[in-house]
Length: 188
Image (cartoon, rainbow, N blue to C red; front, side, top):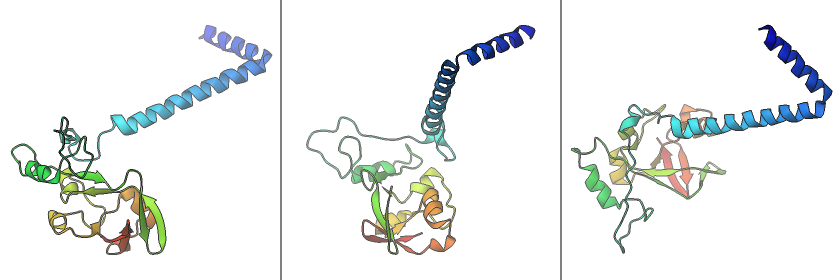
């Protein structure tokens, strides 16, 4: 212990003799530690944490590879399923406990409007069993249903983050109209 204290005293004396070097060393360490913290924080949030669903180990992402030439669908031609193929797979309860679909509404963010206030936000078009298939509970209101999907009901569900940021978690937003790409949708 005595040797460690002597070494620390010697280090402080040497750093006092050259303050420019000391400042450079301290800034280099601070930047390095900050950069590592940022990288590992992002990795933890994106790669290491499980999805916030009851059984994240049972959630899989299905994609198509090797699609024959001259076949098409309405999504990403390289990886997504045509809707009839999705419907056939969803009926295979011997293979899947539930099969859900999701497709982005835009490459980036989509234009939305509530009242007279326009803005942009991320959005996805999802199947009626999206929330029930993932086992996600709604904070307020309800999720989508298969009936909503088959009847093409013009309803929307807000993410918790958007509901918090835009509406300050106001429960009275249920039943209001939100325009997405100019289409009126009822918030459920």
